[in-house]
Structures are given as structure tokens and as C-alpha cells.
Image (tube, rainbow, N blue to C red; front, side, top):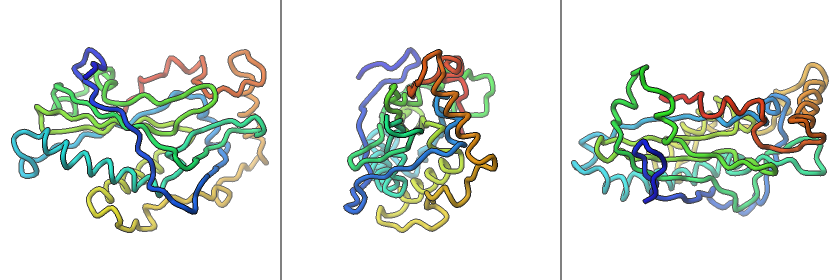
Length: 261
């Protein structure tokens, strides 16, 4: 296994998890609103959650239990959940023939899922100890694939703490594609489908609604959208700049605002 950093986190596997196939959905395109455009070239943000494996759920050695049962359930239910949140398995792109970026999913799209092991103190990292520096959490969240032409929406990392009977789920996300409400709806749906059978129906409260024309309207008549687009097209002293990379002015913010629950 390759070492990820000096903080005792070791990579086990990197794989792709795709939504369960839907014959009637080959492509899915969602235009970004002026609210989304504001975050187009900001650094991605992170969410880190810790879960304790109770003694009643596993033997003294949690690794076999995690590898053979728990991880497989998490992976399978993630695929089912993405079926209801197709755009999250897609990418943000800025087509040459489009005046603004779009969130697109094409059948076969998938999210990156990293698995890792850590010999760090699970109970310390998951505590309310405010003396812990944010950089100690960085190895527990994945990188998000972003290039000039394409930006992934989400990436996941599941890290097992074999010596501490616990694991963490780190999520990296592009803020232009989802906000806090969407994230928590996704996490609740994932947890629900992981706990129950994969073919369990989701309640309406856990299903996303994609028609943004219903609620999101610019009172200035698309003026804000034009302002944001013009700003990005002229960013980094490059005319007609359709790059999706993190803007130079925002790079100092990268990986410092890490939240965990």
C-alpha cells in the first residue's frame, strides 16, 4: 500500500462507483444558476463524518467485519443513491458553444471512491478537541479531479481506523454544483439506503428537485449572471477564459476550511 502522507494514512484502493444504469436516461444537463456561478472557480469544500463501530456489531478485530460487510454495503448503497442524484456523478463543463457552464451527466459517469487505513487515534480526531489542527484531517478527505475543461462534482474517501473501532467518510465537493441542503439530503438518502434494502423507496423529502426555474429567478433580470460570467471570462488576466481551475486569487483558501461532524 502506498503512503498518502506522513500522518499514518495508507491508501488501499481507488475505484469508481457509478449510478445504477437507467435505460431511459442517457444524458442529463442542468444549467448553472447565478447562485451557482458565484462558486465556479472557488476551491472545493469538504465534509468529514466519523462513525464508531460498536462492539456488538463486530468482533474484536474490526477489519474483517468492515472489509467483508460494512464497506460492501456502503459501496452498493452509494451506487443506488447516485441513481437518484445523477448530476452528482457528472462534471461541470463549459462547452465552447455555451455562454455559461453546465452540470452534465452522461451514462457511464461515476464518482471516485478511495479506501484507506489509518493508525491515528479515531477517538481524538472525532472529539471536540479544538486544539486539533485542520491539517490533521486533510489525509482523510479525497482530492477532487479538476482541470481547465472539466471539474468533477464529488469524490469520496472511506478510512478505516483498525485499532480504534471506527471509520470516517470524507467527501470533497464542488460548491457550484451543490449546496449544504443538497449535501445533507444526499447523505440522508445514502444512510437510509445503506440501512435498508437497496431497492427501498425514498420518500419525497429525500428526492432532489431539478427544475430550478420554479424557485430561482434573478430580480435584476439576469444581470447578476452576466456580471459573474464576465468576471470569470476575464479572470487571471486572460481574455475569454473558460478555465474551471481554481482561480489564482482563491488558491490561498485551498484545504483550510475543513468541517467535520
